[in-house]
Length: 160
Image (tube, rainbow, N blue to C red):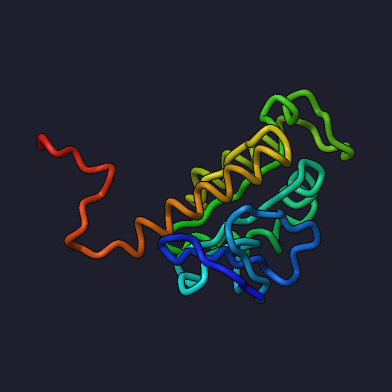
């Protein structure tokens, strides 16, 4: 249940199947999402973020490739979607995960997600930083996607 909204009305939606949901400072609510673990109220068919711990990411891209491929196809159809990993690329290259998968295989799978599926993958060091990244990204996307066409964007160059 949402008790408040941000000044611009943003409410983060957390998928009901998300087993370790982030605790956001912004208002949030639980609801089933068709894709991803996080979205925005009213923009659930446009914005999706899939969260992965390091071990889950490695397992998913190596052992559950077919199922994750279907998820990536759904994500690729959104206006904005990405995968956020609670680890660094250095953790993958050093094999700091519980799988016997070769780091080169995990890196190759990551490159395939980026190049072939065209879904960005962000490595965010650890859970606390990933939560902050996801919240900030969602709030920025809400502002960008709900701004009236006549309102200037902060990204627009006034001199152009």
